[in-house]
Amino acid sequence: MGLIADYHTHTKFSRHGHGKGSIEENVRSACAKGLRQIAITDHGFNQPLYGVRRKDFDRVIEEIEEMRERYPIDILVGIEANLISSKGDIDLDSNDIKKMDIVLCGFHKIVKSNSKREQFGFIFKNILCCLFHHTSKRQREKNTNAYINAMRNHDIDIITHLNHCCKVDVEKVARVAKETNTLIELNGKRLGMSDKEILKCYELGCKFVINSDAHSPKRVGECHRGLEACLRLRIPDSAVVNYNSLPTLKKDKLKKRS
Ligand SMILES: [Zn+2]
Ligand SMILES: [Zn+2]
Figure 1: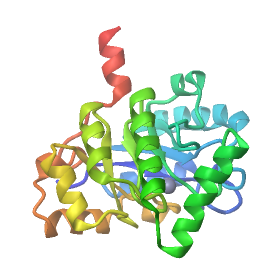
Figure 2: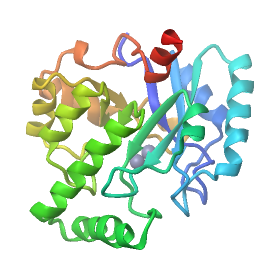
Figure 3: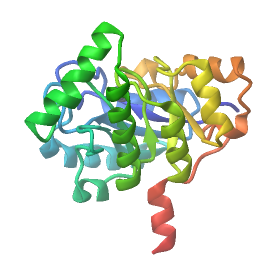
């Protein structure tokens, strides 16, 4: 076996050429690679250039429903939401979340915040930190609290590319990821975390998910960086939820409860 699910893939609904293929092409590629589950997770609504438009989201769902009839694979409706403020706000409301099977969340640079103050103090400042490869202690604390609040206040399944362009105290974020059953992604393209930080997450009992973050169909299921990190750091298969097994997502748990 090996990796049997990819929960982070983009399609043309991530606009302006950012995502290259159709939902069907991603699904076909996942089937060809023997995956049992794939999530379609285009960029969140507050990304003015690349994000899927809220008004287009019902079309995403319709297309996925059509593909479910035609392909022998479990296809999840999802989104890669944006962290949009230092308070941990994300660009999804409770109505949006109801439509999702899976919610991913990460920090992205070209994003509209919910106030001018946050646009400058959170988004723009992190862009500067990223450009100059330096994050002040204060900014790091702000970012850490943003992730912690996001995980506590929203049903997020996966934190994507943690520490990429939004530096945090990984240990503190990992403790809350464990407490809230939030999966930490080992991204197939960019890890964001150092080996030491990944090991810290593991020692604290966090679960990882390895995803491709594919922006083209051929890259679906291609997760070399994440897989290499696990081998290098001797992280056992049992700590990776989509290696030889499939996880129970937050929506599945809710369904079981109701
Ligand atoms: Zn991302
Ligand atoms: Zn992505």
